[in-house]
Length: 550
Image (tube, rainbow, N blue to C red; front, top):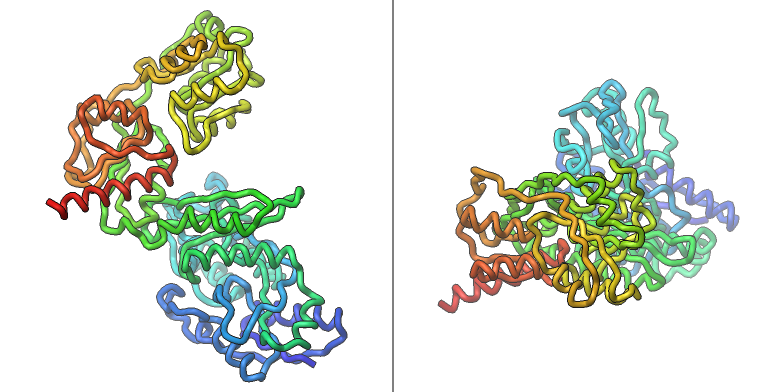
């Protein structure tokens, strides 16, 4: 006989009973259920982050384990504190359920045009999770996010009663309860935005660390792969010093080839305009993937830029992902488009001449990719299958979206010089021809370096950049300005910059443009969101130190 401690909610009772029955089926040991009320069950009038503290739903169960009143406690692993309490351990992690998030909603509020959150404009969505709230807001900023408490059936009933148009829940809870939704509908939410809470979908069976008999019983239901993945997710949370209120998502999966895929997301705090900062890893060494994820996200956790204002200056339609780590790190971020891109019409004769039969493609901007594909499609030219090179990650992503097989510099490189140097390593004849789709008023860096290396470059202007007339800066003073392109730098100089303490260039080419105008600046080591964050924090620190010395 073994005694199972559990909370009294429908979900806790269901998953505890099912797990205990599985142990009995595999070992022949009978069991008894004992219901224990936790502090999290008792306080229902406050949002979970406001209650705070570790072990909201576990402390009383752990106390009962230590006293010997129960032998095991079965928890949703995401609710367990990351570190094992004194004298206790997780003796088993059974087969994992669906780890994703779902939306349960009333079809009376359905709007098929709402995308992955098919709800009408402005209706209320319930969740108690800062992570889920930020993800909903990123997809549908028009929706009202309201706090949601109660067990799963209670939450679903609140949709039936019209208190919410929809609610976000863990799929595993609904599946384990086999809850009849009646006339409500359920839709899975996209995993790229809704990266699960660490351990979500997995159960943790807790017991006394020195109880050999119970540990032996639990071995009969343990799933080593589920445990390894879930523990790795929780190890990222532990490495970042977080608890249940940290807006962190981590998903670890074992691929068919045996390697592990890890995706971690640190979401923006309440009210932040940024979805979050994402980190992806793939490899055999799961411990190393965890270390890399912690290293990538840890600088943002303590909100080192809280109280700082950062202005991101970019082209119209440019990539605004650069603002994400700054906002997650606590900064107030303003993004301003200072230029607009206007198409340059290309005749079919010009296009076919520039492309040639064996010409490789080279791009240093995503906008050039879009425009060349547009012109080629109109002329009936299929660009797929051509050797294609891109100067950075955003440009490469744009080309791959059109089915082009792209080579790009490593993340620690980037820009025109790096692109030309990459092409030189690919075994092309030294006199090979490159079709360079570009802006009419482009920076000459790529063409100059490619010519030095012996390549023939056929420049094909497909758009031109014009400053936006009459623009006013949203701030008069800021701590840092991030400039994301040479054309943005030129437009900013014409406008005159707001008062600032630090000026950051996204890459070497943009930095050269700033230097040509005599502007002191720092340059991001990589043209990535993390590279920009590192440059901003370093430059602000330098400027602050200089002020203190003076």
